[in-house]
Length: 195
Image (tube, rainbow, N blue to C red; front, side, top):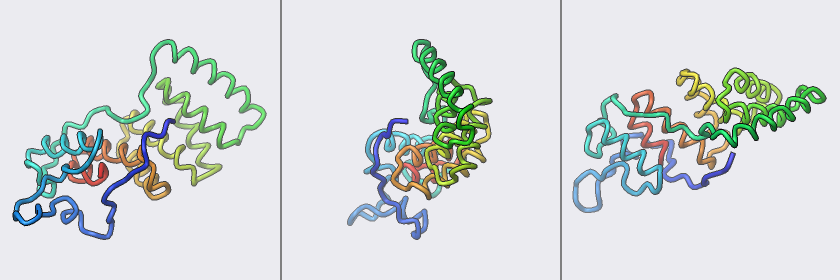
């Protein structure tokens, strides 16, 4: 998977969530919108989370309604790439016969299957990789994406939370965590993850 970025802002986990999201603007006594200062797609998603909750920038009082979509990273692929991935997947499966418990190989198989949207092949491959190497943050991230696509957002959320603990600078972990929070109707938590 391509690493999109590594900067994560405002990870003061010991502070109350409301204090992080609603600090007053300097000298004005007004609340600063919680999405202000978040750059790129994270800022766009954080702003969308707040606006969809109808709170006008105050995420601490956000409702539970959210318009979270299928914006999870690791999209499926076009037809040309699909044919290439199928060839790669066949080669990887042949290699797996020689090394049936190789966690890196299992993760690669799971990744190719996930990009082909073959969740029946991706899920056991990622679980096998994690059984051999429970500290593999990328396998856990992709397992979370596969679970999310399968409609098991609670399980995906648990994996994304673990990814952010294992690899706190992994941008994709935080993005997927935020998107999952949006889908589950928790925009204030999504804003925190997008920071």
